[in-house]
Length: 231
Length: 277
Image (tube, rainbow over all chains, first blue to last red; front, top):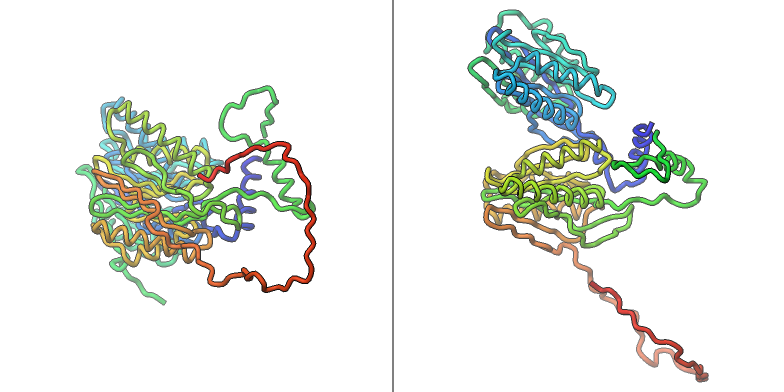
């Protein structure tokens, strides 16, 4: 009840005071397109780089691929504050757990920590997260934790506002048994298509490949993105 | 909704008791006949840039209460630690109190670790506090400083999200300032060029945004020293009146003159000096 009334208060003040533009009072959100693909020996993850407050781009070079542990990353979409806070909390919990175990943690463990937090506080949070990484037990894995706190493992997963535009592309172009390079190209093309169509996604495309050997990060600048037919 | 009894001490955090009353008042504004009080905001243009030897922070100096300028020369660059300063936009009280709280906690932390505090530590403390209050603390901050790992610059939003970037702007004039930055920023600038860039960015905010105005304050932080330049540039000086409404003696002719003395006794005399500080 208190939160609902308070929200009206914020809107009233922004309407009455014309000097402070509307986007000042709006929450920062990662509009976003995020994606993760499994391959034999690791995962490829990708994201755009746009963070918006309303119609203003607050950060055009955001890094939405956040390390949770040495071989485990998460792709963040939704409210920037919520996802940053969740990622910080889970990094801490996972680091502690890993020290207790004296072993690198499992991707499934990280995914479950995300799920527990996102489900418990589902009413308060706005966060759609894809957890991806490599561990010794099951190799490359992708787990998706959408808003509401579901947890499911998928070979390929997309998220964020731009994901709606690329479900068809992903479903028709994904094949099992792709190599790392094929996965990187597949992800780059999917992100490029989403960034072209979704207003809340854009900037540069950030890709990362996580394998047993470690991490390889690449950035594809706006003018270097793969191009398609433009009507 | 919790309603506390008068005798029970507050357990800390915000009391939302008055929200229902405020909502009723807002709904009946037309019936009441008077306006609602508005809180003092720093309309503001604040920005920061990382250059070769450190960071340069800049801010305007206007504080507004609704459509009226409450303070023509307020200081928006707050001290956090000897090597870290923070510009604040949004609700003036929130930025002031938040930066003071974190400055105090950081000093205790620094005494405990026996090291100069890091900018990342200040960033963590600020973002965790603002996230805890879920955006109700209206503080949008530009945090900059130099520590053992070099110069760092963060922008912190009221809901608790942060961005680590080479140049940032915040406040109602941030779009104007960002336009200047996007045009002229280069990595590894010299100090004079960086100061000129920040000065021009704040000036763009001052002249193109109604919520920002008056002077430009700068704060240059390097590994060895901090230059707190207040004011760096008095962009808006009060104009000198060109005309005069004084009339000379004799302009109006005197027809008659009658003097009536008023006989008054001094009963009590006390002097109270005006505080002109």
